[in-house]
Image (cartoon, rainbow, N blue to C red; front, side):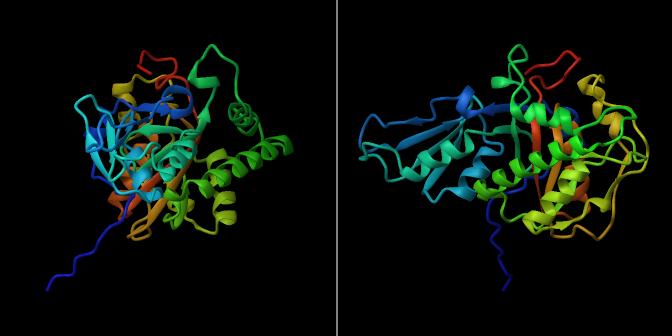
Length: 301
């Protein structure tokens, strides 16, 4: 008889280059942008319903973290509806569901192709470019020297604070627990002596007690920054510039670390390469989400 193996969530769906090329990333922070999530049934034969902005990331996070019997429905509007079975006669929603919303709602969830994809926070309050910079944004600015500037003690001190914020996230977001290795997004210039994502990945791997496989995902061709490239052309700028070592990631569940999530093209392309190299799942974690998905380029939030 064939052996049937159950793959528990988070589930990694298949995707390809065309999906990444046409990706129009969405993002939401429930606490600030989606304040109402739980809806009481209008009759006892119906159940409490948890309505979320999109299925990507949220569905995997819910079923990985929340011990509640639920049925997932993907609405035609793009929303995720989770019907909490057996709760129709309850005056209050299941406590587990309420706690889950409180935990997940602090972070920025991404609508992309990774099994899980979150940022710790926006660059500025509530993702509004006209509002003040928040703590995570300030720390990242201090932790990342630009141009030919060398890293200083102040640089690494700020980076170490970002590491601690990431570790708190990984502790409360138990959906990431199954990751067995850590990788950083490779820098656009392989000659850089200091890379913030690489620094973060090394420290997180050490303190979270996971294998650091960053050296097996490297830039082989220097590339210009894709920040000012139009969305439709971003992937073309990346193609062929990153190489993943063969036979290293077979069956691995990878935590992919970056300091900044903008359009998501870079992280999703890197994840695609990891999956093609044999990785089983890729979980993304960025420190900061930009206010727009395409800074300096015409794009939608």
